[in-house]
Every structure is written in C-alpha cells, then in structure tokens.
Length: 505
Image (cartoon, one colour):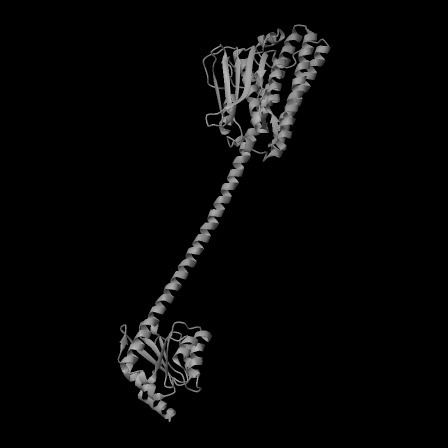
C-alpha cells in the first residue's frame, strides 16, 4: 500500500528532480525521512509555499534510513533532516542520526527527530544519547508548530554555516599569516646571520689592527734605539774610534735581539689566554729601566700597589709609558722623567689606574698628540679611559692617562681575544725577519770595527750631530723613530722637533 502511495506521489510531482545546493542562494535543502508517504505529502503541502530568509525549501524524500544515508552521502549541504524513529527497524532513525554525525562527519545539518511512538524512544534518553537538534511527537506537530520548528532549524543551520565559513576563513588567514611570519623569520634569521658574519669580520679586522699596534709600540722603540746606536757606530768608525764603535754595535745587536724577542713574545701572548692576569707594575718598571739603559736618560718610577691586570690592559699601560718616553726624548730633548702609576677613585664611583709621566724637555705649546699617542688614545677610549698631554706647572710637559679597572668598564680591549692568532703570527714573523736583518747588519758592523776598516755600515741619517750626541752620552734626537722598520731613517730626515709626547712615534 505504501509503495503504491509513493508511486502516486512521484506521478503528481512531489519527488523533485535534481535541485541546486542550498548554499548557492537557490534554496534550502530539506530532507524528509519517513516510511509513511502521507507524512511526505502533508509536509510538502504545509511548507511548500513558504520561504525562509527569502529562499524557498527544496524537498528531498527518503522512505528508509538506508535510502536517506545514500542521499546524505551525495549531498553534504542539507539544511534540515526531518527524521522518523521507527522505519525498517524500531531504532532506524536513531541509528541514522548517529551515522550522520559520526560516519559522515556532518555537524552542520539540523536533525529534527519526529516520532509517533514516544514510548519506544523517550525524549530525555534520546536527547542525552544522540546528537540531534530537536525532538517532536507527530501528534503535537501542527502546521504552525512545523513551520516554527523548520524555520528555527534553517536559521540555526545558516548560523552554523556562517560560523564554519568564518572559521575556515580565519584558519586560512592564520595559515597565510603563519607562512608570512615564517618567511619573515627566515629573512630575519638570514639577516642576523649576515650581521654576525659582518661582526666577525669586523672583529678580525680590529684584532689585526690591535696586533699591528702592539708590535708597533713594543718593537718600534727598541728598533729605533738600535738604529741610533748603529748610526753612532758608523760615525765613530769614520773618526777612527774602533773600540767605542764596537761597543755601540754590541748595544745595537742586543737591542735587535730584544726586538725579536718582543715580537715572538707578542705572538705567544696573543696565542695564549688573554684573560691571564699580569703584574702591570713589573712591566712598567722594565720599560723605565730599558729607557735608561738604551738612551742614557734618568727615569724616576713609582709603580707599587697596582692590581693584576689582563694581558691587554697591562700591555696598554706599558705602550703608553714607552710612547711617552720616546716622544719626550725625541721631540723635547728630555733628560729626566718622573713616572707614577696608582689606583684612585673614578668619577663614576669605581676605581681606575692613573698613570702620569713628567719630563723636563722643551714644551712648544702644541698639545696635539702624534700618531702613536693618538692610536693609544683611541684604544683607551674604547676601554673607557682617557689620555691627555699638557704643559707642567713645574716646567716641561706631562702626560696623563686613566684606565678603568675591569669591573667598572666593560672594556672592549679586555674583551678582544686572539681570533686570528695564526694570521697575526704570520705578520709578526715577517716583522721578526726585519729584526733578524737588523741584527745581521749589526754583526757586520762589528766585524768592520774589529778589522779597523772604516766604512759606512748603515747610512741611516743625514744629520751627523745625532751620532755625535750619542757618542757624547746625550739623548739622541732620533730615539723615537721606531715604528716603520726600514722607512724609519727616511722619516727621521724629514722630522722636526715638537713638544714632548707630541710627535709621530
């Protein structure tokens, strides 16, 4: 009988042809699932003329749970399913509701359960156990109730679809944003890597410059003294004073060997751990005694009470003292020096090492430091310190330097490590070869003196008074010309006297 009624329905046109999707604006797909054809007919008659949100309902009919499941598999955009409980089995509708949610994964469609036998499927049990949206008894579902139920269900479906679309758009926006952030992160990582590489290159260049300055300040002074001794020996040989010339050559040879030891010591110190603390007082005392021995000047020194310093800091103080002594002898003709280094409070509330060097030489009024002192001034500034040169109230000139102790200044110099020790060693060895050549020249001059043959050993100066002054025990005017190896003599010819500490070392 039911099959005949169903065939009759199809003949009068209640079973529609393929309809457009509810989401494309043409209508809301509405699925009626019931084994009673009268339910299909009445539902279509009641709801057929109605529109919801300006769009009509598009009806689909299924007379069993299996048939409805096939329709639902082919159409994922049903808005409402009006579902009977008892069909081919007593719980066919309930099983279909579970399949829609779990098997098909369709959480958007609104399921309205409609039953004529509420005793077999109590409302409280069904609502608690199955994911449905409404529960109605067929006897209470009048035309107005049916309209209200379907209208509310369509509205809920529309809201769920809009929420799902918004969620999808949000997920897509998050995905795109995540991709953009990942790309920016990769770009930032590349930029940071490039910056680190650039910083490493800068550190290497700074380290090379620092090593060059170390060798310049430590070896230049010694080489200048050796050159002056050889010049004096040449003049003495020309005057026929072979014994005195031999003594000068011996001093020059010792100075050349000392310069070579300085270079090798610098290489070893650079390759070693620069964090090792050293006695600054002993190193400063050694510089003062060397100046007295090599140049015949008098140096009064007081370096007691200095704390242990890093290799870089101790070396910096030593270079400042050596440069000040060299400039005072060369440009001011100084014969007497007074040097003092002590720890004193700093303006920032910490502690610093204060180094002062006074000499009795001439003061020309030019307080602008020469190249060597300017380089040291820059190193001190990097370490948070300062260096000044001025006339002294007691006559002559005074050099003052201040170096913060490590805990007060995050000294860039103390943080400098031997990143390129290998390349520094190569550069230092090249300078060592120059020192070896100077030593060989000194030995040659000594042999000439022993054979009593007067010949020019090393024509390093066009000013004979330099050698004469040295032979007479006077401080040589060429004593500060040490930094440029073979070019020292040529620069000495062009130099003019300047204020103490103000020349180019």
